[in-house]
Image (cartoon, rainbow, N blue to C red; front, top):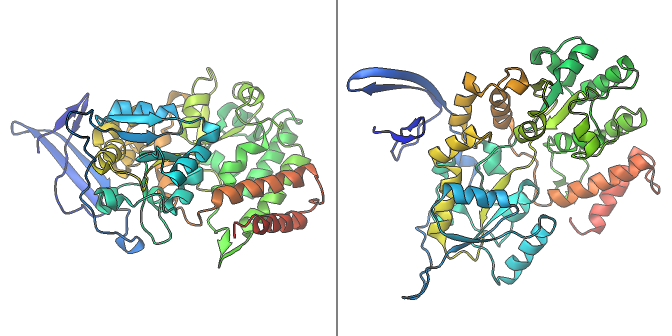
Length: 454
């Protein structure tokens, strides 16, 4: 094989119609007959064909402008400027784009998809709406633009389970993974828990009961001056996105035991004043990152890189926490109006499958959707972080992403989650008749049925 060089990376592509099965493979490189390196890589084939319905893989085409006119460009809808920056960096496909206001993105996208007027060929979609668009007739399978499931085999299972429709057809693809963990202040842990290394701290976050007990321990030991988290909202994504039982069973809304327990868990944190009551991302939340008053911050690597890594003098650690969950993420979908199939497929491959792209993203702090690259990073000392006191976050996040399956997710999760959190808020603040966990449960189920979601 002849390598393709990208900076300091030499990329060797295995070109075959046969996918490498799960296993360990040795790579030996020679230069003019002299061995210059050897390595072992682990291959994990994550896509079980029996779990998905693959359609005929179509040879796509692009619409052609009349002779003498400007060639057509693919139209992209994006929920943020950062996605457009990725396109500018990693693909040569010519494109036009629309970036509606983030607060109006879903509304504006739904309007153009419903009417077809100025509808995008492809669009970006965050995790809140993945199931919705996967189950919509206004998106098409990846097979329809020439992408086969074999191209997705080394991605993480939850990333192609989430954008799968009710017929088990895959419709969306992503370049990133966003598994969540628990970042903790090492000094706070040492002072109030008596230890600071991850292998010991994890026991304080092993279950949600352990989390609550840790909050109580901190509060008592510090005289109420140090809290587990800055505010209740810190734990929302970790708890709710850790759900594995579906909201809807046999066509009717349910309240899984796991979610019912959330009511008591949050109530205990609030009534016992085990947080500072700070809103996430606000100035008070940010101030506690370095003042030694908060033990933990919950999220994916992007949270740590953006908010924690610049807290000079404060060292953090990272542990699994009580559940495997994700926070955020973006997927690419192809709309049913797409007449630029070749361009759509090229963009998706450039952003989510091209090795040079993914390696560059990794070097810029992105957890990429490729198990081979992530496993290599997890065992590579160069990815240890100084702000984590030498800990390699890729080792934690790679294993957590592999553990996630997307099980229990449904098309209406965003609406149901929002209603559930609204009822929880009413319960915690004592609004109306929602004064007990039982009444909150009844109100939630009633509101979902009245809304016509089921």
